[in-house]
Length: 484
Length: 101
Image (cartoon, rainbow over all chains, first blue to last red; front, side, top):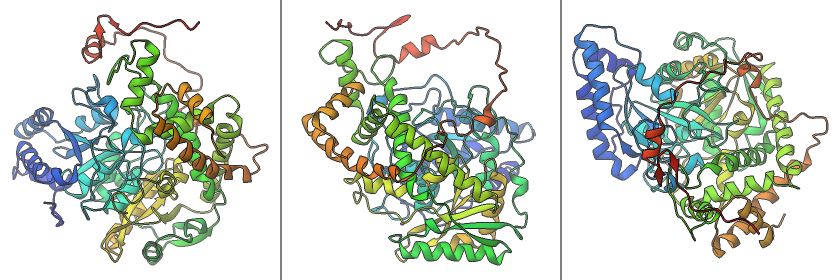
């Protein structure tokens, strides 16, 4: 049974309760595993649980309390990790049969940093296979259900992480965003969800889908907890050559700063025919709320918006076709020896181990990179990507942030788009733009539609402008924006 | 943009994917539809535009300063082999390769 009431546990209330000995970390872990036991059968948010590791970590936190030592920033916070992120000793499937038995021998940097900050990893969450999808219906382990409405999708590909936080089965969760896979499930499940700037969070240990697009980011129930989680995982990592040298500012310090005078860009290309009218209405109300806080709105043109999906589905699939070449039955995961030759093993293992969406994208990407088509598709898409990135750079010369709907629709029904791949791809229409440009973006809840389904408002910032994005999101939340 | 069955089979061979007849037919239809949509990129004049492959390269750059080429023990070989499909330490055993004629 999924409870809708706010349960009161967040990063700060946990810390206070631990410090004042109201509860121990062990007791907190027990409470959350009991919730997962009660709620996960219906939601299918978690694929694997890690009680041994969680108890060891809880004991570490409890020992600090007993010794009167200062507690690290996320002490005791129960956290869920999307199953494309490596966790040492804990099965990591990427939502695929081809990695059904894979156990990573190392932790992703983001996980290492979370544990060093005292967070407690409860388990791994369900996701679309290899992070490819917008509804969590592409998992080889069954779909995830939206805690707000169980006949609806939670969004994807980080549907399990979003559902876990929305159903209070974890206080924070890590997801990944390549084309919208953190922001869109955040919108569908009604919780804040952030994609940091590309390179802000190390990708070491993130099982790759598209290397120039993949980013790790947090889900939580409040902007404060989003900021607190991001503060822990962000920053240069020598193990990831694409991680940025740019220092991370004090993200928590920007929360509560007044937003009066900030210029908000509203691009006309994101308010289109065919979007759900209630989504448009609520987001317009959200923008009006920001105006009432003293923000100035500026109408923008971002002329290459309409080409972003086409660009994304060439670039991301091309990169995926390369990254997924490693699943060949040799070193890990599924092996099917076929007719007993190496080539047959490759073809049979991959044919059997990958689901239909993954095969579709590998095929598309392979075609786009193949001899005779590389210039027409991949090179062309990379040039359009430059133009899309330029739209953002031009916009940020005029405004401090860009506000749009996160998704043109609220959560659709399970099965509704599953047989029409192109329709499913178009779900990402407002999120892929920022993915291609490398900018950070958050989705914040912005009311609900008449059926009670959450609506998301997206705030983009300039590269490395997470502090500005969080400042705006926090002001929006404090002014009642989430329940508009 | 209509993909022929031969083109689908060729791409599947490049991608080392064994597909059923039903999959070949389905992928032919779906990829053709997707590629038709993607054709809209040709509406844009991109002459003189540089491709953007590494979106944040400037911020990760180390100005040519690389770490010293020093070996450090990795220490996880035995862990890795434990979960391999057919470990024969220190190797991964695989089926024989057939020479193409």
